[in-house]
Length: 119
Image (cartoon, rainbow, N blue to C red):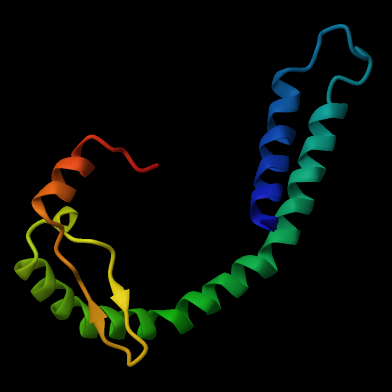
């Protein structure tokens, strides 16, 4: 969230000199530009620690994500090979003992659901 606010502030600061009105102070035409530059430099200094933290976080998450893809990827591929069309099935049910049941829809249910749109 902090990055979004800082990025928005940066965009506004950079747009200010481009939209400066000619009727503003003609004696100091570079004042807005100097202010925008100072604001930009301050934002860069504020963002540097957050960017360093994000870099460290990505280094920590990379092995976990790689392991997840290696373990779950083949199983997901097998499931997609067995179930051609998920719209023919109800939502999965998890039983108290941990079993997961995928119930197939009846022909009537499939016909009725074709006209409906879930948003």
